Length: 375
Ligand SMILES: Cc1ncc(COP(=O)(O)O)c(C=O)c1O
Image (cartoon, rainbow, N blue to C red; front, side, top):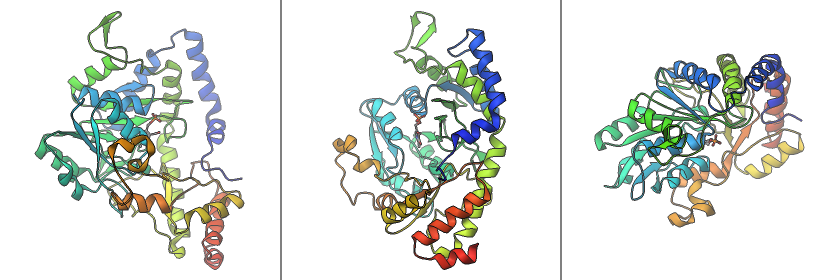
């Protein structure tokens, strides 16, 4: 079986460092926030290009406090995309604001800047572009529109640790940026984690308060906050993994380039490669195949662990029926959802595994001869 991702292989590759770090925290008695979390915040800020980091217990929490700290609340509208994980939209909903969707660009699968202005109303307060699969959204036009209309931009960088847009890092492009360290992410906790970053000291201060019950000092609560604190154990583990991230990203990008090469003859549609100055970090390597469910079943039969990110765009999820959308409202996202298939990709993947995935896909799409050539 070739899995979609292999967390055990990652653990084995860094086992002694993780265990040393974890045991240090367990012995320290310092379990919630703490010195490892503070050190991780400094190191992650430096990694992302300088914005200040507020570490929290999930990417969803990061998005929630980011939006709240920017003053988003009931009666406001926040523009985002339906081709994302539901957390992006749920975080907007938690604030009491209304999520307003714009479709994605069929070439990049990220927010189509040309569609944003038509979605802006007097109630619009923010835009949340999603760096889907580790590719940064087309930020310059998005930021220009936001400046013209006085809107806050919150990057959903949950899948984009270390990704770059025109030489600038995800995390330092918008007013605030949010990351997830969920176990399967490119930079992951052994469990859950997240971070919100900003260069704006007011946002940073409010986010720091909101993650810890709005407490300025213990039992002095100046905001209605939450228990969104990162655990010190996760901070220590993230520090170990952050040191490996560039190496892992290079491995991901090399495997993705190899997929580009080996799948080239199959006539399979992929998101357009990022520009030269951009750095896609391939949290997910997805292709578009007609008859996706049949292809997926054939891959499963060949013991290849494929995924679908995401099978139902958020505007068609029953949980958000109240928004009143129907099929046809965001046709690009819907077409991607119908055809997208994510292939196994993890830094420890071997060339033999990679070839097996390509061969199985070629057979599944009825072009085994293309494999023979590729092999
Ligand atoms: C695009 C996107 N946004 C937000 C989240 C939420 O992150 P978390 O699972 O850490 O709450 C995720 C990840 O799961 C995600 O992929």
